[in-house]
Amino acid sequence: ALADRMKFQPGSKILAWADFLVANRGWIATVEVTRTQAEGNHLIEEETATRIAESDKLVVATYLGGPISVLPPKPAEATDAPTQTTQTTRKP
Image 1 (tube, helix red, strand yellow):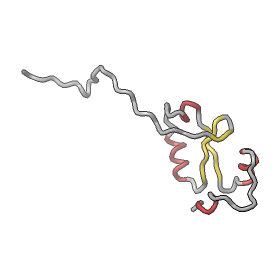
Image 2 (cartoon, rainbow, N blue to C red; image 1 turned 90 degrees about the horizontal axis):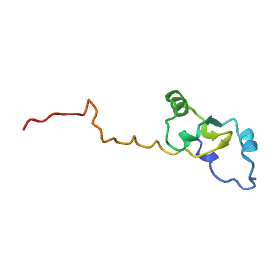
Image 3 (cartoon, rainbow, N blue to C red; image 1 turned 30 degrees about the horizontal axis):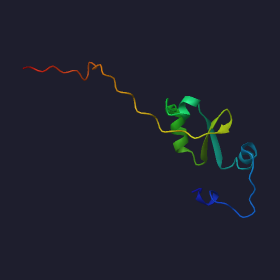
Image 4 (tube, rainbow, N blue to C red; image 1 turned 60 degrees about the vertical axis):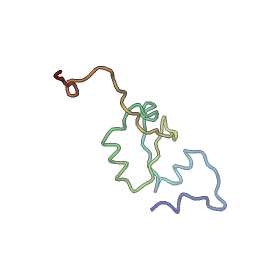
């Protein structure tokens, strides 16, 4: 629905992020993330993720007020120690 807003318009000027956001606040929303979330080391809270998914605005992740890329969550690291739910016993 916002594709027509995502292309260069002749005569457009490059603005600082704060000025751009103010000029486009009607169709852009922001969500503040932590550095560890941006690095993919911690998940974004479920409530925030739901709000983003349901938003009719373009949602931009910000860190300390500035835009930032958010990497996908990193997979949980496997451990060598078996857990109770995965431990099995075999009979010879």
